[in-house]
Length: 118
Image (cartoon, rainbow, N blue to C red; front, side, top):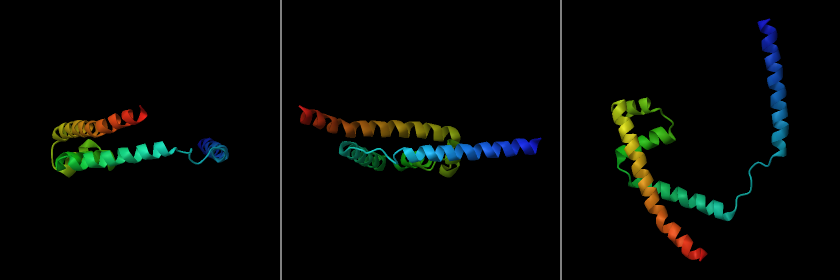
């Protein structure tokens, strides 16, 4: 009985994958992005990189370990050689600093875009 259930499951998965691949061929690979979307994304990435570079090393390290490398805070604490609670506090502080720096960098750009649209 278990074998038959497993075979039924495998057949249904194969059918689902066939239907899904047929449907995906009808969907465009990537929707066209406007030049404004591309420029806005590039601009934000530059601001983010600059803001990260300006952070003190201990905050930048924590953000990169958790946000980019995908480590859990417990694993990042081991890498940094600090307690879990210290890492949580450092991560919270790093997020706050990054948010403030991004906000400060985006503000002049927002004023510029308002002047241009007038």
